[in-house]
Image 1 (cartoon, helix red, strand yellow):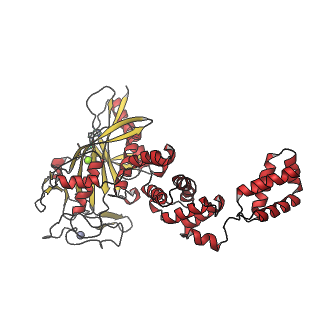
Image 2 (tube, rainbow, N blue to C red; image 1 turned 180 degrees about the horizontal axis):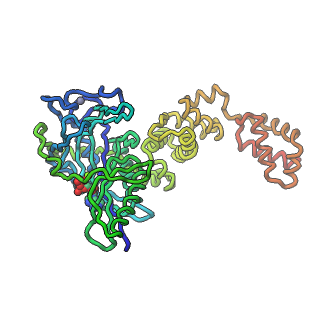
Image 3 (tube, helix red, strand yellow; image 1 turned 90 degrees about the horizontal axis):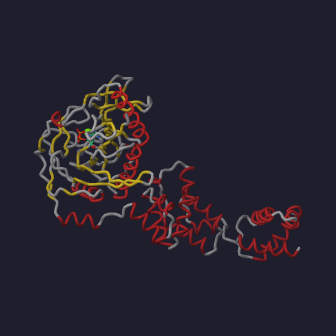
Length: 477
Ligand code: ADP
Ligand code: MG
Ligand code: ZN
């Protein structure tokens, strides 16, 4: 029999508000354990939460970008569970009236487009972190993350392959980063997914029983886990067995998933309305205001880079693959009005340096003004392109001021034709073999002689002038 894989995702995104969802503590990642805390986020008796308006604003932003209906009147509920990472013994979340519902996202895999439904987006608080210490046989707890705001984005079970899941996660991550609602650093856990997987014989209407793998934070692991899990379930069905609904743990090292516990359902959590927080009412004005101020999303940027700046589809795709690259491109172009030059520097030199230095695009710190100044130096013929590359690398590594750097290092292009002419005379005299080769019809010999001239002039000559004068002289010989 042939089977079809069905996947649904619950993606948690940590919001980049300055303060936590119900108190004024910082949301900053890391820090000494239990220093970003107060009575509210550690659940001290008698403390009361106060809603952070910024969280609602970010949720509306995300909802609009994911084509959701915004629930004008939404509420919080308590999800009860006992676990030491949650000092209140309940998580404040939204079960009955989540802030966003009925959205959709378009994805593309191998040229095929399809929509993935968004069931809902709700706001909730993050839990603390448990650190199991096998040496001392104890468990330590760090509450710094407790109360950091989260959006949980729940998809419909619309995925039919691991490739579709990765396409969706990539897009979701892009959108969240461009919206400025999250840095989506997966390695820091600010984007993580619960992955629900089931299989069914092709043609069957009903979904199969699913298993769930929680808190996955690498695309690679998610991809492998889906394929492993589908295969495992198909094998069970083929042997006449039944898949049981359970939570499983993906073990990256063993490249396999293992049963953790049978699946809990909403009843197990004894949800009830949160009595300490007022319902949230969202006005049309607020929604319109957010809509009108929504940052431009990557898809729109790509289209605009192609139509407004004449970039190729490929270049536009690479540059919009990270927000920091897109902003560097736009800000540089806005200053020097040379989009092609800015694009070439980013696609060539910057990409090379990022990979050489293992730098992530989000960690780029380049002043667009400096890149624009550099482009002007090249365009105005003050330096040649090779020197331009060297200066770009200095901007990237040492944040140098290009105009000053070029002056100090004496890198200005030599536009002194008589000097070039004298140098070429010398090169011709010193390289009789090269000259002979050229006369014998060897094209490469010309390049060699150009290289010798450039070298003698410390790379600062105008390549066009060198070419022209050398050609003239060789023809006269
Ligand atoms: P819970 O909140 O208990 O985990 P939900 O019904 O809200 O359960 O579903 C959670 C996620 O599981 C959703 O993303 C949904 O798309 C997905 N899902 C539900 N049924 C299936 C299924 N049979 N196969 C794969 N995914 C599923
Ligand atoms: Mg779930
Ligand atoms: Zn606090």
